[in-house]
Length: 247
Length: 112
Image 1 (cartoon, helix red, strand yellow):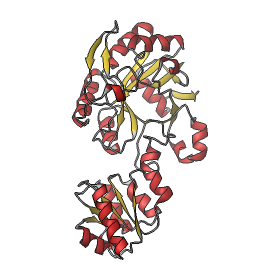
Image 2: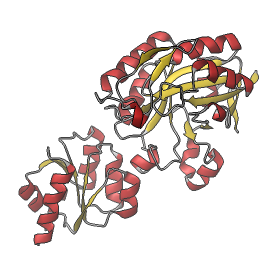
Image 3: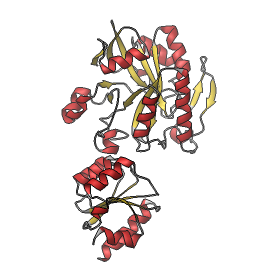
Image 4: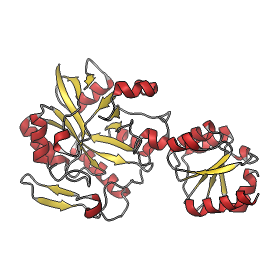
């Protein structure tokens, strides 16, 4: 068993709010510089940039969890990750079918582009990615677990786009691999106000939109190796795999 | 004024919670953020929202809301309707949007 440093909430250049410096190449080199071993790629309602980040990460020994930050119908942000290319593709189709057909205005919201290894733009997403999808929180939760994914409601401490802001409190039938507390608070601090969150594994991530923020907070995970299955086990605390500390 | 008067005047569909149709109405509240409703809605209010998640019933029960109007033809989740029956808090549905139905409810309550 070995300790791995994991920051599981990072936006790329594809998110309208992601800085143009958040190219896959820059994200991986910044994560390497900060000695982060595992990163999660979570653009708003799209997985379009995941495969390149994963490929570049592999070359540098950084494991990349592939997923998205979904905006549910209730405007709650949730991280969803999937293990293989097929599940990720199916997830992308699900997102595409449920994203409203509203055009992005890059001057207001920012550019939404996919770039290649040489930072050439290879695709521009025309639909505004930060909109709420038509997927309810419950439907998203079911979809993720039917496809053996990892489900993490994001920044639950924030009074914007969180379970608490949108739905008042944790739904009684909520199932999640972990709850994320933002870098503005901490799992320890937020559970003083909301002790009920302690019944879930708690993590913290950078929610980076700029390279500087990558690894500004992270979780130390005890794993046999960096893999999807091992990370899921660590969140659940199975067979010695565990979250040692959010930092 | 009772919920049943509002149902009739505003042509609302009663989805569930029929046991609460004689609840008294003292006012109204409009919000889609449940944390805001918890903080600010008054007892006996009719709450207008587009949320359909089952947490709306828990919030309504906590704040002694007299009924919930779901706008734009929203269909509540099964669990939401079940809780509405248990709590006797009617779930009412309309195809109108929030602005329109809130205006009509305001006029109705003001007239009284």
